[in-house]
Structures are given as C-alpha cells and as structure tokens.
Image 1 (cartoon, helix red, strand yellow):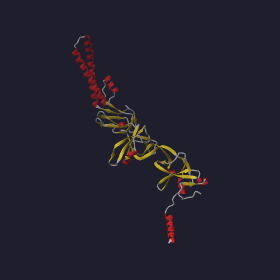
Image 2: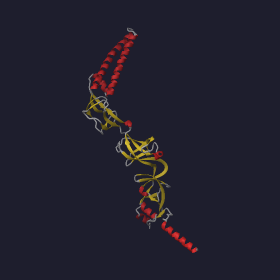
Image 3: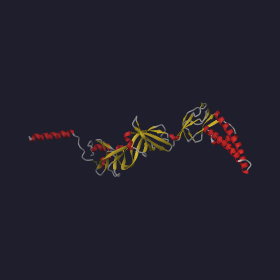
Image 4: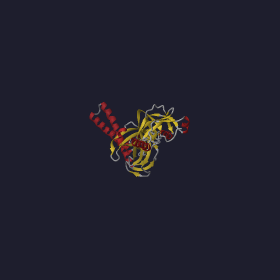
Length: 369
C-alpha cells in the first residue's frame, strides 16, 4: 500500500512539471562581457521628467470669438473696388473696399447744413454774450440765444455721429467741413490688424446696408477645443499643459465646461495657444495630449527599453554580473518614449536597445553563454 502511494506521488509531480510553466525565481541575468557585446545591447540613462501625460484626445483649433470680425457695408451702394483677398494680412484702419453710396451724399448735405446753422448761431451767441456783459440786453434774451446755440451744436454732433456710423473717419468728416465737397465714395476700413479669412462680396455688386464683405481674424491667439470623456473629468484641471502631436506647440487649459454633452458624454475643455502660429491652422482637427506637473520621481525611457511579461512591464539595469530585471509602472506614452515610475535613483545604466534579447535570456529562451 505504501509503494502504491509513492508511485501516485511521483506521477503527480511528473504531470505538474509537464503542464505548469517554470517560475522565474530570480530577476537577474548573468552575462559575460564578451557575450554582452554580441547581444547588441545599448546602454543609456534614465531621464528624469517633471511632467506626466494624463490623456490623449482629439482637439479642434478654433479662433477666439473676441478676435474674429465680420466687416460689413455701413451703407447700401455699389462696390467699386475690393482691395483685399483671402489670406492677406491687413492693418487696422486699412481701406478694404470702396462703395459708391447715394445715401451718403444726403447725410453729408444734412451735416453741412447743420454746421452752417451752428456757425451762424455762434455769431449770435458771442454777440449777445457781450451785450449781456455790457448790460444792454436782458437775461431772458441771453438764455434764449444760448439755448438756440446749444440746439445747433447738438444737431451738428448728431449728424457727425451719423456720418461716423456710415463709415466716414473723423479726418474725412473734418475735410468735408472745410471744403464743403460732397462725395458718394465710402471707404470701408479694417477694424483690426489681422488676416482675411473670407471675402464675401464681388466688385461691381450692388449691396444693401450691413451686407457682409469680409471675415477677418487676429490669429495672435488660438484655442483648442478638447472633448474630455466624462470618466476622466476628475483628472483634468485648469492650468494643465497641452501638447499637440508632432509639433513643439504648447497650450494651457483655461476653461472646463460646466455641462456634459448628452450625445457623446464628453466635457468641453478649452486650451489657449499664445503667439502667432505657422504650424497649426484654424479649423484643423489634431491629436492633443494633456500633461500635468508632478513632484514624484518619474523618468522617460525609449519604448524599446521596456519588456512585457505576464501583463507586467520591466526594464533591465546594468550591474557587475549582467543585468537586474526591475519592474516598472508605465504612466503614459509620448511618441517613441514612455514615462515610467519605479524604485530608481536616476543614476542607473539601463538597456535602451536589445531588451528583446535580454528578455529571452531572462526567461530561459536563449543562452547568455
């Protein structure tokens, strides 16, 4: 009976060794100096970093609403000239278009009429002011003269403001008051310095008042609109940095929306790109990566330096006998590099190339001798 139990035990051990994979007892690889050169392993250093990637998400480049303008015709008329084309850089006050407007002639005439009446009223005002001081006229007459003169001044100011609303500059209005020469030509000026994004009219076209002519934007600042999945809302905060894939461009999150989009369950995050950009363009859809500053010790290594085994990540640290196999936590990836954390001093020499060969030796799939 005892012999039978012993045979059963031997049989169980044999089946166990056959079907159970070997367990790696030591996280170490012994390699001679000669064989180290044959493996094609390249050593490098852990690169400490202060920022870690949090989320990668698509983003749309948009123009801030306060930096985009629609230039429209302030009066109805015939477009005689368009000076700017799509893509042109324009300066504030530059003439973008010229219109021939009959209505402008009527407004100029009314302004000159009010100006003449004010000038006549000014003579009466100055005369009665002197007569009052000499005691020649009564106080009531002086008050009537002054009230009439103030009415003339108000009317001139009203017609002047109407001309300004119509599109005439202060310099053009002053010139009209000096020369009394009416002109139906209306110059449309650029309200800002920026770039023409769209031309919305044609020369020779007759347009109505407030008809759009150009769309202009100041591109010194752009926004990224990023859709954050609702389950990641808690990990994103205002002030986080945003990287644009394959570019050196950086942005900073300035706003987190207060409501979730019910259609896709995402939250809008807005990041501002400061300064003129030649790499990104308004309307682009790009890949962005949100990163955050960290006080913990994290390091950047090439993706090729990381070996995977049974769902865990490892790197190989050089020592006197060969390599120590050290587990790491992969926090995030940035292109061809990964951000890791682990029990490191930062002075270790690691295998940045040849990790596949070292993994084979570690798992017993190859020989170091």
